[in-house]
Amino acid sequence: MLPIAPLLLAGLLFSRPSLPFEPLTEAHVLDAPTRHIRASDTGVRSLLRRGFRNSPTFAALIMRLQRSDVIVYVEGVPRLPGALEGRMMMLPRVNGYRYVRIQIAPRGAPEDSIAVLGHELQHAVEIADAMEVIDSDGLERLYARIGVRSGPQVYDTNAAQQTGRVIRRELGVIS
Image (cartoon, rainbow, N blue to C red; front, top):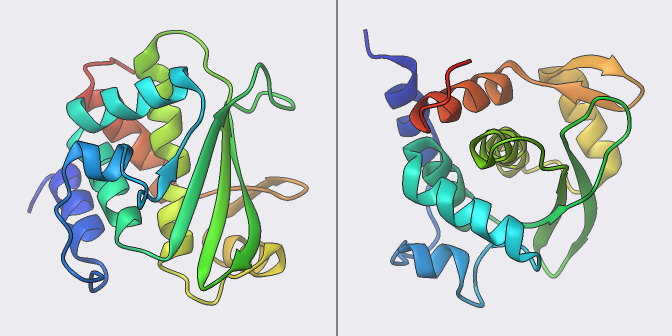
């Protein structure tokens, strides 16, 4: 039996056929105009870069999203409602692309914020894998099916929780 991290990584990389071959270098997935993960905040860009370099699972999430029809906008915010450290919202579909907005409230060490971001990127991959999700209603139906509800329009998944834990271990954070 394989440990969970390689299985998770293999599932992310091979879960769906890729779009036409693209070199998936750090510059391509984080800096190119065709990147699918976008952030204007330098702090968030630094977290993305650090996560990509230091966590194979985090890098696999970014590569999986790069090969999808999902564009992810990530922003750092001072705080989120309640005890949330991160959240994801669905934006309207435009020109064949689905758009997702992730907000994170960086707290503590950068590795903690990277794990939270990885958790949210796993949710974006869940959307990438669910072609029927094209709006907020579809998002609600998806998470009613695959998630665990913890409040009004607040869901989580075991996969996202596990992804966060794996990324923490890869970054050397003891949890």
